[in-house]
Length: 583
Image (cartoon, rainbow, N blue to C red):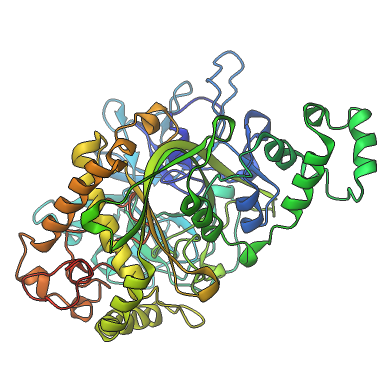
């Protein structure tokens, strides 16, 4: 099939609809194809040296953005039909789509039990925690209970609809009359071991797997967790010289002398370099070669240094900051207040997981211990040196806490964070996390809670929805790289990221009002006293006094999946008065 079957925004390809994700369409559903099938000629290059070094890749490509050409029937993004099993709403026939009548033009599938009835994809599939996915083994499941696996009779999927539970859904073989509800499948029995199918790479792509298959709904929220790495484009990498060098770094790999580079430029081997000074180009090459790779490449601390320095104003760099005076009321608690008038963020999809999400790749230091490579599904069958990415532009507000006051507070509340730390260790053990995971620390809980409180208040006055705001927490206690700051920003591929409504609230008098109301609202919750009395070890959610009514943010906004939050560290609550940083 080479016809257009649907549309998707570029930003969704770096999140919910990346390679390996199932996308529902009006007539059927598809699984987005792996990167092996993408046409790179239709993709623009994104230049972000730090992120490329971090992920050990040579290129970042934006998803194809060409219009569908009905004459040449050239699509932009390949996809495969999945699941293959379809169900007729009239006769309840359950069979692969090729057992029905297929309309040639639109590829819609019909059952001819009465008149032509459009069939729909089966709601159930199986997957494993290593990312493998395949159709629900209908015939095996219904016949395995009594060992009648040789029967190949026609199947029907009945839905009694009495209670609305999974026990109402029953698969039946019309030939041998075997029946079985799906209750067993969702309770963990009746399914074979995972067979290692990777349908996003092609119908026949398989690998060895020892994981247990799990029955899931086709649209389940835990079916696809994108693993996204992001970085701010900061000086000097936003400089046009660095941008030009970044685009040619793959070809510059063996360039060992400035004189040789000069000859190549004169011979028009690097035409984009002619507009720049030779010394500037050579220094940019040396600088980018000096970047660490993989685990050595720190994404957060260089951003912290640039943001903390403030005063960056360069039109071509697309990065502009303006320092403001800290409100007098909070001058002993907050060290700096900086308006980030322009910023650029690059997000790259590096893989995905199923069943359980993996930790954020940009989080401090812990990715080496907690990310299990075997549980991160690959975006391609072959080993490739590029990833799909997206460039976004926006604005934000950056604040830092007073380090001296913060150190004093950390010493006072050091024991209070112990329950959360113990629950985090248990959380990692329950999920077979390898190594010794590092707890983010007390200051991270404070910064994270303050960030959520500010985001809730900022969306009221900025004109942005709560899901449009994002956070970037800078928290580190190492002496050489101490950080304690928050960047709250909005960045989108379209013009919404530069409306100015957010950054204007970073002015001294306006931010004082925002922070005051954020802290005042955090003191009380409609769920109190239950919310304020909640402890991390109560239900294992890694939060203290935090719930949907007071602190939890949209999934797209929080960098830690709404974990490590506690209002008691921020302000006095109805149940705890001695832990607050803002007293």
